Amino acid sequence: MRLLLICALTVAIAGASSPAIAGPARPRVKHAPIKVYRDEKGDPLRTIDGALVNQIWSGYALPEFETGNLYTSAQATWTVPAVSYEGVEALSASWVGIGGFCENSECDPVDQTLIQLGTAQAALTAKKTEYWAWYEMLPKFSIPTKLKVKPGDVITASLSCAGICTGKQKWTLSMTNETTGKSWHKHVTYKSSKLSAEWIEEAPSSRGGVFPLADFGTATFTQSMANAASADLSTGDSLIMEDPNGQSSNVSAPNLTENGFNACFSPDSTLATCDSP
Image (cartoon, rainbow, N blue to C red; front, side, top):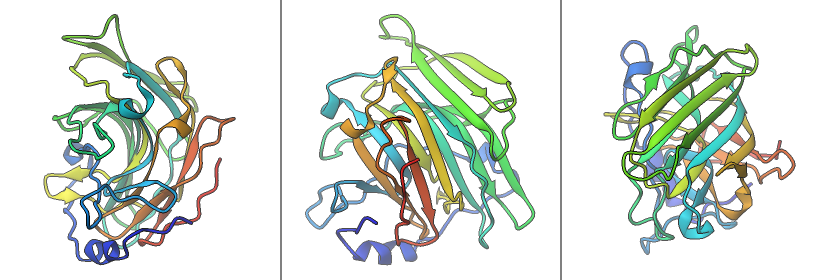
């Protein structure tokens, strides 16, 4: 289990309020750039073993300032996790994307471009949950796709930029439900910084702030790729989430054979033990 450097973080999280979800969750969900916590010196907060602590992302990022690479494609496979209702409306999302991470080691500034696609889960009441596939190009809100997903479905998602990938970049977004055999794809134009690639379990946001993180148990990512090659996640940053509403998500060490990792939910700021897949 990772130990946080600053215990006062728990106090700040406990007093936070959460946005309400009125009606279906899908149209109101936004996926934001990383929001890092900082220590008393103003440096990005990290755990003792180096994981970057932030409000909304748990997973791995490969940033250009560490790898020396710009990113024009990324891919991942994950299993849609089941979420359970814990007394409050809550959401989580699994995705692969490019951009939206720190532009340098001080995480100042944060890249405001982010093109991504994935699946999302909402626990709205004890009897109502929602699951859907989506894509998003900041600063716009996420857009649901027609690809149907449910807990246990295995999803492969990818995005790639055509040609020299400058100017009005042409991107292809693709998602396949390996369990049902159904697929979806879309061609879009978007100007990305290409400064990072990410594989993330997220606490989505709305105009009211970060949602409580839905209890997803363990989310498993495998077959991570970047720039059409296996992504060596150990060369980038591991990210753990301390949701402002009190929940947290830890990540395992990368599994080099599966080229993936697990993200593990906790109902409070005590990070869950998280073993590799």
